[in-house]
Length: 124
Image (cartoon, rainbow, N blue to C red; front, top):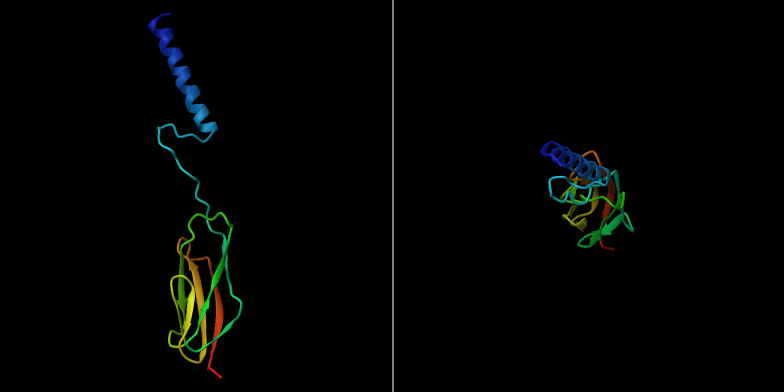
């Protein structure tokens, strides 16, 4: 086999390897591309009640769709921090009687959010 034929055969093999890599999602540069990112489509605050007593806490939960979302980082906020605050895990701390709106936003896509009004009531 001549040098030219050997070079053509080597090129065909290289082409086949690249084609197989593309067909099966393999990286041709020797690096693993890792798992694919799944973007958040929606989120929804879920909570057992929409009121809490002064000096008590209320855990807010979030239903994220799809469930396979890879970036699940959230930002929390309260519109009236004198009535209630909310920490980075969604734990609301009631401070004074009144109403506030709790907001949760996707850190990756600020257009994806949900809100819930919470009423803080005086201890009877």
